[in-house]
Image 1 (tube, rainbow, N blue to C red):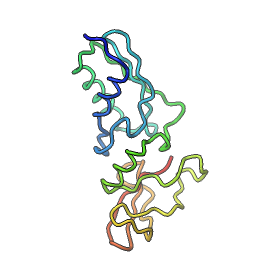
Image 2 (cartoon, rainbow, N blue to C red):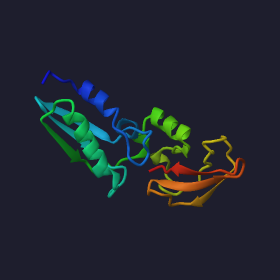
Image 3 (cartoon, rainbow, N blue to C red):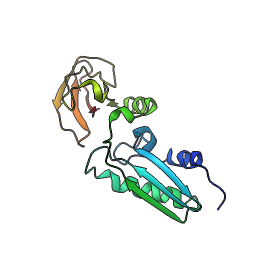
Image 4 (cartoon, helix red, strand yellow):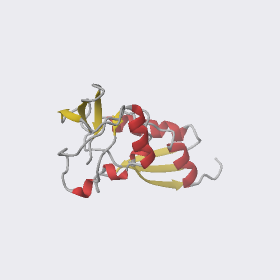
Length: 162
């Protein structure tokens, strides 16, 4: 195997997508905490978006397959639970991808104090209207809630801030 740099590994990881929101990569989500190289071995440290996230097994397998296909003989995936992941770690490009996909991105930073409670104005990702209302704090996945737009009448998901 040729000498591989961390930058190359990060480039390869930029093609590994989230199985629940396939327009986002693991780098867009900000879950990759570290890459450590040792010859033909690589260790990738990731932080789940929330404890018990069922997508993490698939994400770990996708990372492993992507790197094995590049010639690594051993790929280790380590989970780092602390500090806990926050939507602050998402890339701005990732937030834009969410909006274009029809999911309202997080509205504020996690340090603004409200935690998982959503008292923010959430703009519709389809028409941009702020005349929206919360339908359910719990969407199809724990990281999203359901809204509807009173302007264009479309339902949409909102990626919760945490």
